[in-house]
Image 1: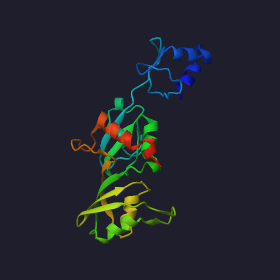
Image 2: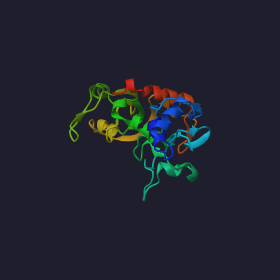
Image 3: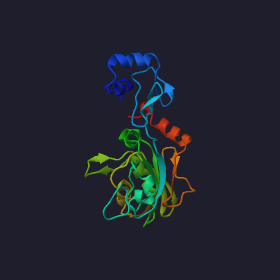
Image 4: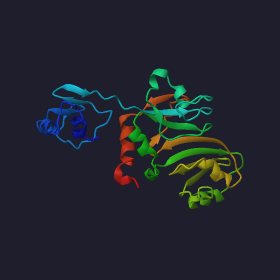
Length: 240
């Protein structure tokens, strides 16, 4: 919402009042005087008038979690343990998942209470690379590399996957980089070679790598440098 509209919704302020208050720098946002009525504010913004709090705001939270196998990417589930169940109950309020992982997939998962941030992170147009370590039941042949790079047609959705980078690490292991997240995409791509995926682990999203100090089930807040790097990748001129 625009700041001027936020202020004008108050029953004690008219639009004319709002203009005068902004021009006089009597309104502050997050501790800084603001004259720009077009400034975007949200539930995280602290807004004050003459030092009086109109909206306290609440802190935005951005967490990385080392997801273990066997829990589902959901905020609640009547039958299965969820990733939020890994957090103390007091830490869960308002959090949701920014990009799912299948139940048996492990690795980097992001949690936040910032809906705009999570939507931008998961937009198809973001093209943020996601890096996975894959282990398969059968050997991975050199011919896989070209097939993944060329893209694969998924008949059910009638789409062709975007080019993916496959780096063979061993006879049954590879590192795969995708810029999209189709339904069960990794398993379906290896399925073209009738080669089941037996373990899938997400190592990275964009510039953000899973902290090696985090054991499965552990989490921590993203630091300022990590958030800045992700924000740069999600800048409007980078999307599309």
